Image (tube, rainbow over all chains, first blue to last red; front, side):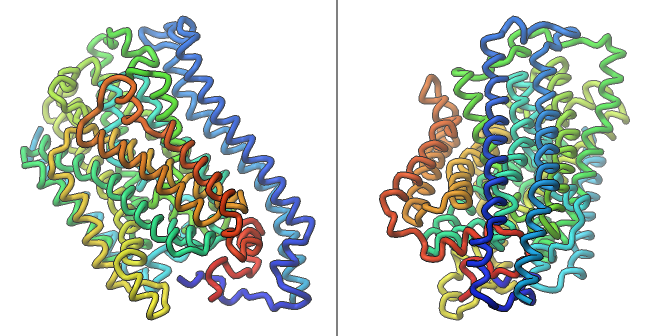
Length: 117
Length: 506
């Protein structure tokens, strides 16, 4: 399948292959490193947080079944708060990507495209 | 329940779906319109469309049913459905967009430079898609039966026909509009009755479920800690492998918009999922007889008549029937487009394509494949499987998590993945999870450890898939694709660098 919107954006191969130039650029290396070093710990932390919650439900049984209103207990409230934590972690990632990934990516892109034109 | 009102409600939803689809048809002119709506959809619309597509029968009917049957443990379903988007966003969304691959088989071939990997991925997409379509048809049959007394096949056939008509007509562009519209129908349909139900419940003295184990976590399953962990793994890691979810990230104009879209999606899903929980809890008080009669999935539809009653109750019930049909239609349309795309591109006409040399399947082949994509799960739904719809969807997630999750994560982040390793892992993980699914579907949930391991396979099949992929890849280092360096740059370098996406330069 052809790639929409990219056919007309070919960069002329001036001064070596564009892949090689990007690959060798320290900003590309840094970009990959930043991305990787952020998302894998984040994913691990996120999964760990949920697993811990389940474990608490098992072992901290008395605490989790403390009733707040009627039969609505702490476990139920914590469970619904998981939505909030998912949203908060996503916000965190979006801010990170906006501030730390996109500016570097733009810089790299301008450099490569500018050098090629 | 009033059959007249229900028929009216279902007709309005079906006709509106077809009308918006027809409107979208006039907008979609090119193949890229057909598949990815030309990446011209704004984050707000796109998020509504993702929400509309994602909230299936399992969400609209199934979760309340499971909460009614098994209590608070079932809240992991909505939490996991939502959280899967986060892992999809941070681990695979951006590189996958850059790869230029529209579908999972596209990605498999581009990254691994192997037609075999592409073929295996295609078979898995179709399997997962059909497994996910099946509960939509079961839910539609059940809903129409409760609402009007019609036999089960009628509801399923109706959904199949409307889905086919809108998919045949419009492709992805019109589907985006249809689905965005359906998110709001679903939210309205499930939220408005809650206001009346809660009012009726308060005037009834606010009774609460008196079953202590029902509100205690880790009581629903026989091996609760294992089953809960396994379910969480399946839902978290399965979302990224669902064929109809992935393609949605292409309809954003750029990466930043894709991130905005995901945030809005999480908010939309979070708001929606509060409501099935309320239905489940109220159902425990007022409709626990549905558990014994094996119709727990009907609790959302039955509550208005039991609690509110009269014409008001009938109107609310009709509104819920409309919402449920919106859920069946939107999810099924998205899945049918994805399954049909893969069928027409890879499994039915791939040989023809190879000789002609083109990759773009003709719109006609796509339409033929759409018929097949809808007919197979429709036929399966007539077999009379007695299953909770959310459970079947959970099994689809388990297969996706055990196959595409390792393929995507390792394919994007580990350059030493080889085609041999990837295919071995897909076959091992997807195959084992698939066998577990078939046993559970045919024989029902078993007892003891074997029952738990088969009903929630993800906790062992996901690690197996990862280990097989890594070990086999390490043992076949000479099979690392030749242009891996280029592919990795294309996956991880900034977008619109003008790089030719991998695997497409020839």
